Length: 481
Image 1 (cartoon, one colour):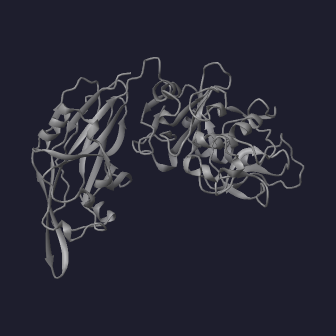
Image 2 (tube, one colour):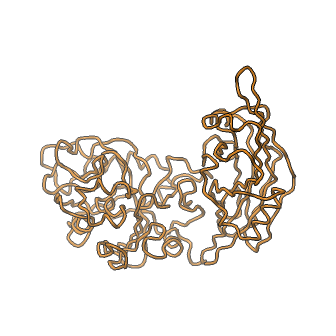
Image 3 (cartoon, one colour):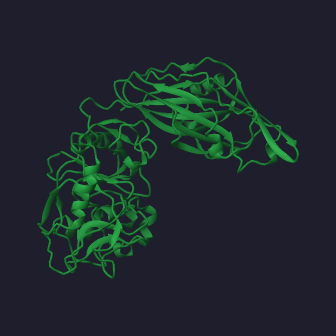
């Protein structure tokens, strides 16, 4: 698939910083300078007819001083709108190009991006720490940057990644301010001038590829490991490829892959409570139809796995956690979104504790070729022990899960607290498996099923769920319909 780009420069933000000393207190007087009200466009062929609308508001830093974030959010932001006439959703990067004559260091400039008229922060940071975005611009586009800022740029900082629904638009607020926590007298009498640029990437998947599952398989997965995605066909050329599950699933692994999905909300900026992550894509019937398995990014609270302690319940008994997930939690989801969750057959027979078992060995006894025939048909479950094991980088797939503390830094599923899995113990029937707060998997000791541990609901999406936007990052999760 060809990547097409379009870049548009906003009118320039100029900030003149003059420091004076009054009664022993240092103040910074900042005056925004409007160099031009025009918008410079690079005419690259693209369906992404993106425009940025300058509302006439500039960053109002007149007669102010180095300030805190809370104070900065009370100032008037620089507002812009990104719109598109594409027949598909469009991703974009937001950049800040700085003039080479600036004398104030970018390490003193703090930026905040929010949704228009909202104080909920989408991205923030110190400008000097932002990603270098120069390589995203070819020589022609770099010349356009120079034209846009009426000079020669010195740096191009990438400060935000977002997306726009097809034939839609999104408005944002940008705050720039001198960070009072990092500023000292070295900023006295110095200047800072910069320009805002947006570069878009058309995402036009093949008309036959409309579902989120198809998009990930055909556009995100390339080779094992790229984009944090591995195809578990049982073969591969990377280290520990022979430890794959061998079920033809696609699984995300590593410290922090871009596998975020916004579920339960259509807001331009996904609320934190609606952030989920993709465990993987699974073709349980081996018919070429994949269902995406999600897990909530955060816990919904601490709950008991079950209240029974008399050694009488067996694999067919429905534990309390099932009701917590499929009634209490499911009831909080809008019915329209409930319909996007598939009724799935979960393997719930459990397994025996094996302190030497690796991710593949747990997979085989938990849900693979050696698993129990006991199942439960339901919408909401929890992660499997093997899900947790395979979420670590492949270098850890030969490590026993009982000693998985060493894998936590490369395991995106690691929560940092006691957390239940869906699998019970067949060796001691009143216990269930959980991830210990330091990262290893166990079930023994006092940590029995009546204890309340963290719960992150997990479920499979209907295979027909389509993608409408997003790039999979935490600030720009995949949007679905």
